[in-house]
Image (cartoon, rainbow over all chains, first blue to last red; front, top):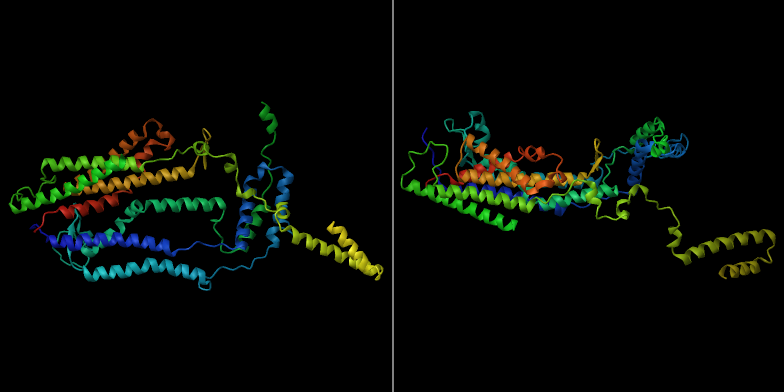
Length: 241
Length: 147
Length: 109
């Protein structure tokens, strides 16, 4: 097959701009996301409930280090049939409907908005403005099965499969540049990480179960069947020896 | 130092890329590379090749010097420069139900409230006993409290 | 925090994660840079992939030399330095290889 040659204007007016646009749009999206997302607020009731659940779990797991009376006292506090915490607390089982909660609704809308709009708008614009160019050639041979993937908008049967069309180049960039965002916005990502750690420390990032009364019931059952097993039996002897 | 090496490497890479394009267009213009089109390793002159690889190596070194500031993974090294107060700070063991509530509350209003309770109790008692002396004993009790 | 049972060594999970993040960072930059290089010198086909793996392993060696003797302070195993991120950088490498190859391809002026 005869060697194809591309006009160098394609290189400077299609190939390069596509990459720059994809990259910059990604960065703008990131900063918009930071700009628009606000801190989650947790109401007191939820925090109390999740802390109680956490505490009960800790008792189940580490109760073996407590003396028997202390363990039973704690267990009784949670699971007493008349006055136990899990029995007494009656939360209305509100599986939150995101449609009815305006806050969650706006959050969801924002997330969708930020993901969808650039995809649709930029993708549409690129399809409109840069349709039908052959941009580049991948430097390795490919089978013909890759043709629909790499040559969107260009329906030439006899063209070698390693040529890439502009729309496909955009899509390749969209996926390939993800780790580059990590590189460029790395500091922000690190900040997010430390922030998540802080949340973990203060216990604010506990995952809230959707149905708190169901979680209480389950925790109640599992704590009730937990038997006390004193792990430090004869610890004085083993220390002395 | 790392940043300098990295910048040097990147500039060198850019320059190598530019020279490669120049060379190729030159070859194209002089109709030179029609015979070497099929070879896998390109027909770049040696100096560009060497420059590219050298700059890659330089920027590798630079990146590693800039980025690779690893943290020791042993927990002891992390705790070496922390005080015991920080390490032993566990949220699960916080207790908010203690005497500090009274220590730092608004003292005057608290006293006032206790006092009025006391007076009410006294008044009720006095009313049940004798209505005549109620006002006097109220004054008395007030004085006693304020002293 | 996690405990390694055989010698009861307390490890900081956040530090491990941070180190892995940094390793990933290095890998991504090296793949981007080596992709650029491969594009500039115009490698094609199998040679390009070979070049990636050579570069990646070379970077690991440089890292090992950089960390020196006390690399067990930072990573659990030396092997993870070589193998843990080698596949994650391939996508970046391919992108930059294609990009620079396309930029340096001979074309009509």
